Length: 257
Image (cartoon, rainbow, N blue to C red):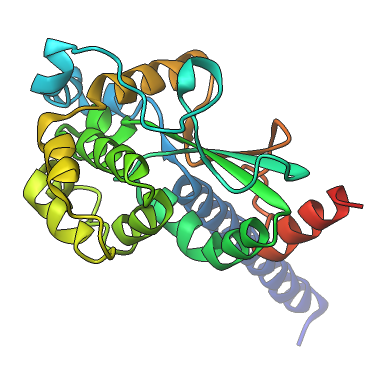
């Protein structure tokens, strides 16, 4: 084989290797974007799919804007936080969530055992803020109805268990099943003693609807871009994709020493 032919074949191989490396890099970037997009339910999707869907997300109960009734035991500015855990815990985790958001479900599923362990041992206190992001993005009222229902469960002293039940039974993001109060009350049957006349009335009357709307406004004015937003000691830790339940546990336990 002539030197020229060998050089030609080598050059072709090198070109092929470069192209393959470019393709691998593109695939890696694409995977990162997909993972990044699935980490949070993003604020502002309505701008992409149209203002009509955002307007469709405005509920009748939101339109009539009743009095702001905070659930029992709510704390913080404007009583917008539902606390879980002891007041004296060394660490506080602030979580902004939408009951209809699949990324919130993914967070809850992955972190729930660790969060329960840290709360039950007195090391961590969680402050939950409920928002209605998906209603605005995709239309419907499931975020609002679900948030009102868990606030009603807080009145009954069963927030944590019912909150976990709703995430375990969360429908697909595009399925607005949580807009049905009957469905929410049916799922409440999974929490012993929760379904009482008072709970039914609270869910059906939308007792805490205006409180949820106020929480949504606080979320938007806080400059947060998506749910879940998870803050430990005020620092957003969930946007760091290397965060794991084990790392969170380590951080909380370190703060206790």
